[in-house]
Length: 588
Image: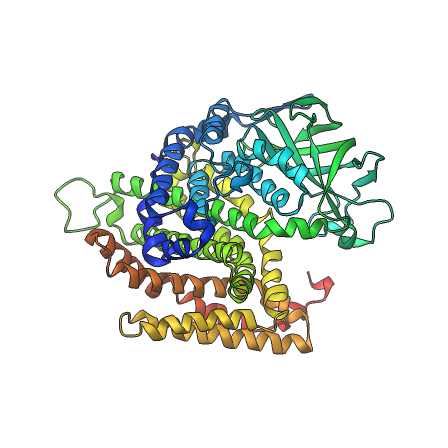
């Protein structure tokens, strides 16, 4: 595997040239005191050092070692212990955390870039600090002050780690079916009993304590998802003075043996009358979890993007070095040319480059919406940013990861046979990325969330607001970029398809499901087109001539060779529900 190089030049370009994040920071009272461009650049550079030097070089070794389980004790790869200490001591887990409890208070637009670097370095390792940050989000938003004071400082510092215990063997997407029970106790705590599966970092040897966020139901709770509550359940009890006490009645029954992310412990967790503490209100557990879902699902998208970036870097290094055949009369005399001269290799590399750079821009755009929703003091702006973040979150999760797997497989193809063997690290990226399409809600569920909850529920209004923004950008820059004509046509097609599906769904609700995945992908490509348009316009004034030329050429490639997929997706959606539902069960 090639040496990972964090793309901080591109990240800085997105923050300061494309999205002008510094303007929002300066205008906001909270952010203006916490962050300014030079600080942000220093954070990116330091994150690059940590990920390039302390994590990335050991990714393959950690994958081959994996995690082990012995009578409830989980052992992680040796390199993870030192890397986790580096990450914890550097304050990276609390990068976007609340300063009142020891966090650094950085915006998501910056923290997301650090998360991408972590995932490029080693996706499996990144899950430990990433899930801890996610647990902090729920605690910060919904726990009472005593719980926040007790748990957040040690979670932000990495002295303790967090996990989210949602899934049960019989209840995946439909959490209303969970059986884990929470019985109220006289001291105000709850006795938690039940079993959870697929718990990332449920047990490990990296932190002094593990703070589990557990979904459970009280006796007599309403049926389904309306009866779910959320609890903090520490692995080790925390004494009144903050020191650690006795072990709680929590144990790891086993770990899963998985296709990928071998360095991440995926656990079966058993709660046998464990002491827990209510987070938020009784029967409002899903509300608490959904507070962090936009962030967590974007994090999964960044996992895919991180692996895809590593795949591109590996494939490019190999294509420049590997000699095979004679493909270009412009090359010097020699027995062979590097394979980058061959048309198909160029096609693969440019597809990867174009999609990665658009994906990074899109993830940053979604992050800016989350920042605006969190920090703006103007109610109407806050409401619009929140709605837009919710609209785009399923796309960020599903489209980034669907296309990331394609990019990792494409990188494997550049290597040929060497991409299939373990030596080069490409097959690890394919295995690791595959899970991103499944957890935090499968991508099919994300597609239904987009078209059902986010588009149909608002009668398309939130989507139309976004289309108007894109059209305004096109109108303001229509003489600067010929590709804007193509983008404008795609936006009109997406708008008309949206209206068509909603009208058809009034007659047959299955129209939503029939269109869902293709609709999400069509939406994703249109957003990537919007991102490329913004990047190409911003690149025109970039001071680095080489960067400017590469960015504009890659944008042109995207519009000519990738963006036409929008048209075929439109046709697939227009075919409607009939091709799916003319089949009887027996026909399968």
